[in-house]
Image (tube, rainbow, N blue to C red; front, side, top):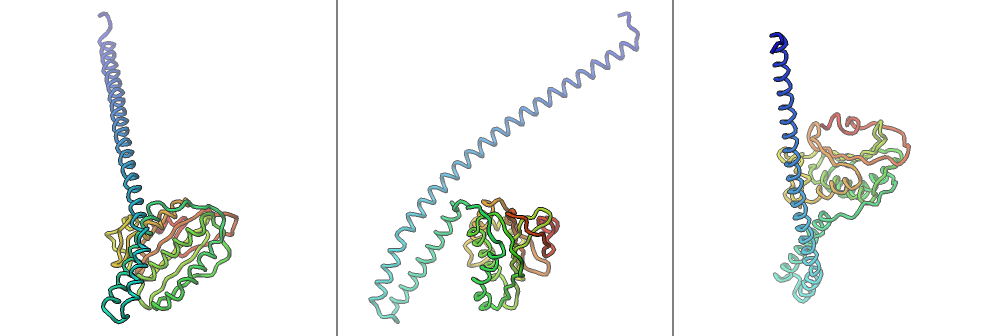
Length: 289
């Protein structure tokens, strides 16, 4: 080879560089191919699991319907039998227990059916402030009986885009939970406000109660997970599902000084004036994590 030693060294370096680059490209292609294969397998497995879960939900829903259908007849039969015995007898007492248990089972089945397949959201403009006022009117007496102050800051009309009935159900559930978690002398606040700069409408409920056990975390939105002794574990699951159907997300955090703050947002439906909130931060992100 008549080339100089420098040229030969340069050629060798180039060969090594080209070989390393080709090896790196081939290795990257192999990794990408392996990753695509793993993702395809995982996607197939996820689809299979989802199909099995859907089948289980359909089976469970059908079973719940079949169980629920005769409950009214059972309750009616118990009431007829109870009317034939003295009201102060042991039989009448057991009949009353039977009626209560049938009613409890019917409520549990109704909750499961609503969780398994919530009704579709009917999206339309509605007055968010009116929803808050209605909830306070419905639960005001219950709050007084429990010795809890239920407050709703007055606000101007705020028009949100969503399902009014489902939103009312969510806020009702959150306020009921807050009342049950708050001891006598405590406070529950509920409000709707506009969030700058998006103009979306935020609903929030906060209490001075015992708070949510830290170990539950986001699991409180899973079905049959509850921090209350008498809770069914479906209320927050249903609420989160109803909010999700409307394009929002139900969130919570521990409240400074004790208690819990829940909130969710729905899109605005008009150009209502912007407003502030109780230190929540834009979109509920800066202080909520």
